[in-house]
Image 1 (tube, rainbow, N blue to C red):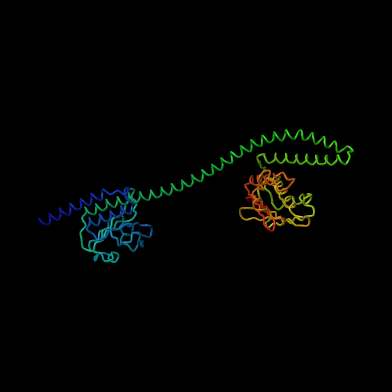
Image 2 (image 1 turned 90 degrees about the horizontal axis):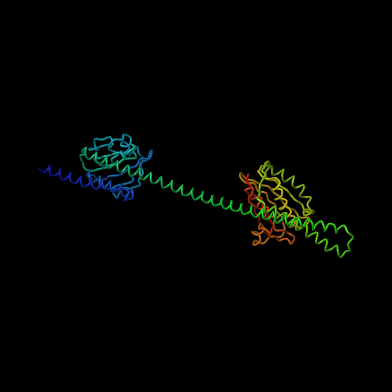
Length: 411
């Protein structure tokens, strides 16, 4: 009668424990708390001293949950040294009711009884094992083993879903970063498109204005040229010369405005940079601004090829070298150098003239800003647009040693 009552009591206790375990949901708990409650429930169900949940990661195992606060929840161990390895390899429950008669005696660390059940997901993947240990001798009924297997399946599903959730979170973060990156790229592309449309509109309007001014200006210049052929007195020649000079300056200004306002359409060809500069240097030395100055060209790399518009790049370096010559006195040297790394070509022109104030440097490439009394203020603005059209960068640096203008182009 007493045995029957004890069995009824044990059955009732097991039903209460099963009800608690079946009511657990990892959705309302953190995974670690959920697994901890499972280990506590299994220890009560089996009347064991310790229950752990282990994951198998190749040759290494990890304890991820335990009912004992003394057990390190992040403890890692070699799988081949653990009795859980037998459970994972066989995919079947392992029951040891008398450790002294078991080949796994040394692996049980003084425990007398052991029950290990694989963590098997619904698709059949084995993630690890739930292992329960007891110092006292006990019997594991088929019903108890089947119950622990059911709970292990619940735990495996929770772990698998949590992993999928983590992967989804990582994917979402990657996707979010990619969307953010693409959004910025689209915004930049849209800004460029708007800028191109604006410049196209300005260019069309500017071309019309330049045309309307150039026609009467040509007539004025023809009239002035006619007067230069007459035998005028000295007092009349002075204002005539000034008028001719201003008309020429206005013509040059209109030409530069037209160049600046037009979209930079490139005719790309392969250019050997060293040969290109050596050829250009011949014509540059003949410029009036270069007379009496020495232009020393040094290439630290040979055979470097870039894709560029030959005529527009000529315009860039004619402007840069002319400015450098104007910044120094006759007898001084202009240093023109070419250097490159694996991705970028740097062409720099250095003059030893007076340093440019730091507050003026950013304004040098702005349209119509000039430090020269006769300048149009469009030279460097045009240079910058041409360089940027080549996906390059124009850098102007100035110090007590002089000024360096560098053009960086992608190789």
